[in-house]
Structures are given as C-alpha cells and as structure tokens.
Length: 231
Ligand code: C5P
Image (cartoon, rainbow, N blue to C red; front, side, top):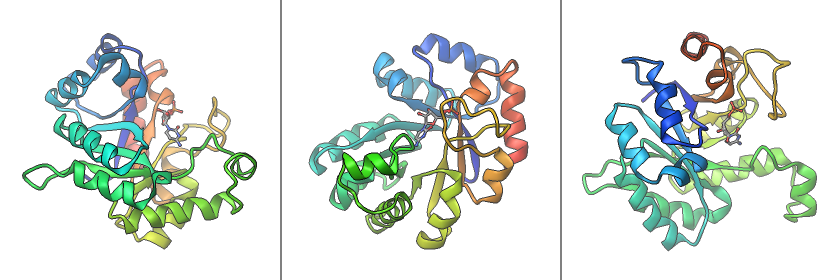
C-alpha cells in the first residue's frame, strides 16, 4: 500500500454505504469505517466490504488496558481490516500490546496508526481539563515518538503537522491526515483545512476525505479529483 485517498464512509447503515459505493461501479476505493457504521452494523460490514475488494481503515480509536486492547485488536485483525487505530494516550505498553494482538498467525497484520490529540481538543482544554502543560505541537510530537517507539506504523494528524512528524519520526512513519477540503473557505466543522495538493506537498501519506466526496453532487468525480491532485 502506498499513498492513497481514503473515503470516510460516515453513513448510519450498510444500506446507505452500499448505495453510495455502488456509484463507483467496478472501482474499489480505500474506505474508512468509523464508529457509527461499525456499531450500527457490527463486524459483518467489515467482512462484507473487504470481500468486495475495498481496502479498509477501521477507525475505532481503541483506548483501554493493554490486555483488553490486545484481545480486541485480535478480533479486528481477523475481520480483514488493512488499517486500525488507537489512542496514543493509552501509553506505549497499550500500543505494543495492540500490535501483538493485531499480528495474525501468518505474521501479517493491518497497519496500526495512533491518534495523538484529537483535532477537537484545544490547547486550553488540554491544559485546564487534562492538566497537560505543554503546547499542542509538543504533545503531538511526543505522542508520535511514543507510537514510533512502540513499533506503530504512523499517526493520524493534520497535514500541517505531517512534515514535522516525518522530520522527527522518519519518512517511513506514516501520516494519515483528515481535514481535507477542495477550497480553503469550505471548512464545515474542521478548524484547519488543506487541499489535496497541499496535503501532497506537505508529505501526507494518506488523506482521509469525507464530506467533500460523500456530499458532492458527483462523488465519483470528486474522488477522482482528490486522486489526481494528491497522488
Ligand atoms: O467529512 P470530513 O472530510 O470532515 O471527514 C473527516 C473524517 O476524518 C471523519 O470521519 C472524522 O471523524 C475523521 N477524523 C477527523 N479528525 C481527526 C480524526 C478523524 O476529522 N483528528
């Protein structure tokens, strides 16, 4: 797997997801299944979409004690996901246990990506509610370093942070970046956005794109524009 555009399938049901994907005909884009769809439809939605030939990023952001995460990751890995994630805040011990759980009997495993600080968390809330006194930038980089030391494959971050993460953690450490829009003024609820071509320039490895594709008048055309601009 190399650089790619991942479509965030933030739909409430399998029916809506399949009808959206039907528009792509024989094409099989890499897709992200998040909590809404997974909790609504269960593990079967992962198996079904995998069987249809999609690459799957299972965005369930696990965070629990190491043993629980290890066992949960074993289940997710068996569904055939290509990429899974967790919260780096769960510590290096939790991340290492997750990797163990993900590794299949044949030695293969999905990529494992860490969420550093959620983009909805402000520096002020981090300080006042989480009692983390460092800057957002320092916290993100420290969590990325922890993830790399635990053996993970990369982090979810803003494209604006991708270059810094690569300079500290190396270029083979992946940056998976949401917050992508075709135009700067079209932010919706994302605070900081970049276009696919800017994300490419900043060194993102995967862009995660939801509404600019799913809510477009012509989703297939919007997806192809993302591919053309990003890859
Ligand atoms: O519709 P939009 O392009 O904003 O969707 C972005 C996707 O990436 C959503 O599924 C959202 O949950 C996810 N995401 C994000 N920011 C993060 C982590 C995940 O936007 N820090």
